[in-house]
Amino acid sequence: MQALLPLSQCSLRPQLLTSVLPAGDSWGILAFLCATLWNLPVVPALNSTDQVTTRQSIQQTYDLTRYLEHQLHALAATYLNYLGPPFNEPDFDPPRVIGAEAVPSATVDFHLWRSLNDNARLAANYRAYSHLMCYLRTMDGAAPAAMPTLRHSLAHFRASLQGLLGSIAGIMASLGYPLPPPVPDGTPTLHSHFLRKMDDFWLLKELQTWLWRSAKDFNRLRKKVPPSAVMLHVETRGF
Image (cartoon, rainbow, N blue to C red):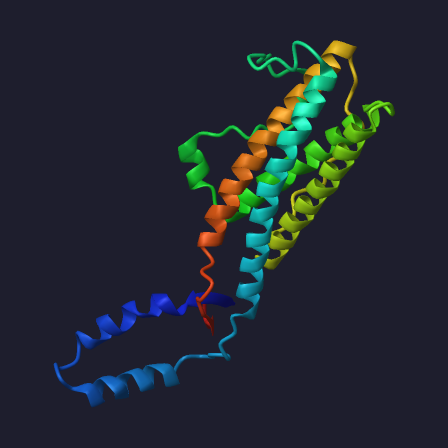
């Protein structure tokens, strides 16, 4: 079984080893360390290329989430004006109902969020944006042809979000995590005109919250992959 062990973690071991050897016996310490290294099962050549590539992907994905936040700010203002009152009023805060319930909520308890492992974080992001993409297609198709600027903004945002989804999938693959099951392909159920507007309103709110959370997730993840770290692959036997 292959295990990844950062060299920085190995710095704890020599301190423990020197405590069982006489003080000042540097040749004895060196001989002991050489003997220990000689008996390691397998120590392949050091290689940090994959790690550097993964960190770059995480950084680019983080940058993309921040860019999408900027895009959404402009898109939401235009779209809410298209929906009209009360949706474009600053204090409008309706309950989350109907189709928007199918979109996983980005709201999570802070302590629960901190306890999530990397796989769970990435999987939650991937599932959420897969659902959100389905609703964006519906919004894009419902935008009136008489508003070409709005249709263009929706199409551009949807293409960027598709890129984010692909980036998350790439990071999961590089870290050895499986992708969540695909979201069933289908069109969200449409209700009355007003309830459809409610769904659109909540979709924009969930997109805003998810992009904010994703930026936190990827910022946390990129800090776990330091740029200058060198990884040591150690093949263990009997475990």
